[in-house]
Length: 345
Ligand SMILES: [Zn+2]
Image 1 (cartoon, helix red, strand yellow):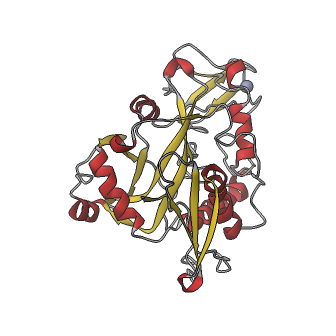
Image 2 (cartoon, protein in one colour):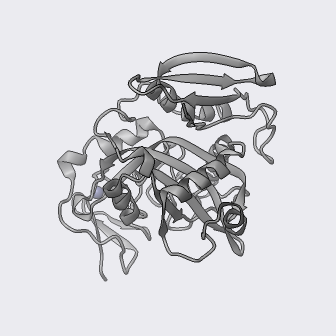
């Protein structure tokens, strides 16, 4: 038997998360034990105060998809959108299993922009004119709400590689902040670009994040060697990195709280949680419906430029002109998916 998927874990007594709301009702850690071959039930061990164990049995999907909700609820009970039973969350359609061979589970180290107004390396929520939606810890997705790192997402689907290790710049160095285990994918709105969205069934983010030099020293990897966008990781490298990250407590709840705080800054100074695309809702599976339900109706099959020399985009549906550095999946004015095209000047 293998122990797998520690997922989003709250540690009892982890008070405050460095200035964040101290009243986090923590629930202990949740561990999963893989079923014997041929069975589809997973054993859940909830490790609470004093390491007492509560055993439960259930279908893995039900439990796994509830973990981010539990953590988010614990962090900010009043701010979370209800995700329970959302028809938009995997394993429901249009999500499909990534597949791939368990003994050849490779992955990627990928670089994302993190927020310089935050102690933790959360995605760059406040980036002027280019607010970032990924990695989207609220839904454990990557590329559902944004167009970033498209070729990585396409490669993950083609290879059946589930692991994403997130790297970002902090000060003069790069750090490893966490990982996803991707289990599902779906076609994105720009089909002509091989645009896929990825969804994870496990994640862990670290406080503090670890400098890549330290990671390399302990894991024998070469993450400190500069790369742009992403780098392929072998299955062996992924196993080593996974062990390295899983030895540390999970701080995803603190990341969620921090993103919420930064979104409030955007709201206060710019009128929306995401000023660039006029989004006032928190990310949630309910919100994700707007990005999933009309994909088949409106998908573009032509090749779309994902950079605009003028940082301006025109909606083919409503004619609006949108200013944003990155291509957006959805028109902020009419809500149409895949309708923006670069204005070349
Ligand atoms: Zn429009």
